[in-house]
Length: 527
Image (tube, rainbow, N blue to C red; front, side, top):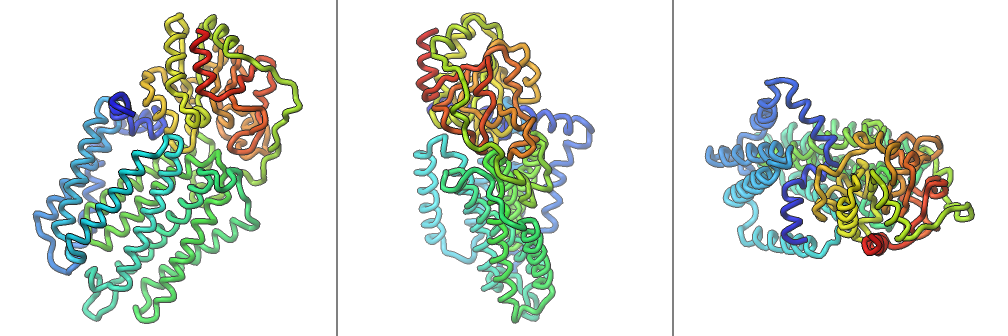
């Protein structure tokens, strides 16, 4: 990625990751709504401190210097989020976050009491080495499934910590004078392993769908809502009983909670289609934060509590915003009920219908003569790694006096902000990138809509076909543009949601059937 990526993404990474302007416009309005609100953020973090255990896992009082170090780390985490609210301050925010995490990790290592430093060092080297190699080799197109995979590991870590605490509560300092596990610790254990198990199994399914090992279409299970509600009720009921029952004889209850939680994670994510996967990734991120926070209480680690709460709450806010952008119910996300109630009503590509084929020369000529061009990138651009060629094409058009804008859908790609990050990597000016709500009205005045690798986010079926799995999701009104160029590998495929696209067959549409990067490079040569 080089220095250009660091320069661009480093200043805009978090804003890009949360799908650009919409989140921060909302956050800014909330922030400016009252002079008291800025103080509420550190205050909310401070509220977590008194409820964390006042003793270490060994039962000894917490060293005031340790408490101060965790407090400083928590403040730095909060400042990091505050700094990431703007491109101008995001690099400073990233530094705050890195310093805060360094303080938290060093403090934890210094105050450890269970494992030896060599053991911890070996674990860090193994995990850090795997992470470093993975980060170096992972392709940008595989980033969504990587994120889902990492979320699964966070959830599994929470489950393992909970199991270790249950099997050896004395080592964690969670026993009362009678040798029973503290009631509050039982609640923490039950919630921690439940959320962690749901995060793990749900992330595994998300990984399989994103990686192509499972179908991206919704997999509808019979009576799924009844089953899900029954399993969730069972988890809640068993957790409540686990909290009040004597420690002796609760082993079966504890392991049942773990098993049901793993099961519900699978059941919640399997019915969700590919078009909704970015919301799934965001929601699982939130779950992983809450799981970490719950285990922070068990471990008596204030920094873990604060960090988990920040991750959980920010992920939940992002998920809510994305649900609004997709016209989905936030409650249905949690219940795993969003997506289609039935399979795609029109899943097969209608390759026998008449359509027009265009060429790179056609696209170059039409866009050079245009006054306004709107580029709509999608996952196909990411697969082809065409973002640099797209930016070069746009630069040449701007030299010809063409007004070029990029239209980013909240769920374009396979994770929140996927397209934003790719465009940032290619040094696309941020003031040329617009969200759906900001640019959708401009398609009626656009001379050319250039769709590269997108499908579901420009599909009119979301507005017209009630049986479609994407029905109700806001999409770009590309059909209003005077001319449409649709870059696609072939006419034989459909979108990730498995739905054919009427835009292919419109009179003003020219299909540019080729690899996205190759087609853009040919257009650049023609310009």
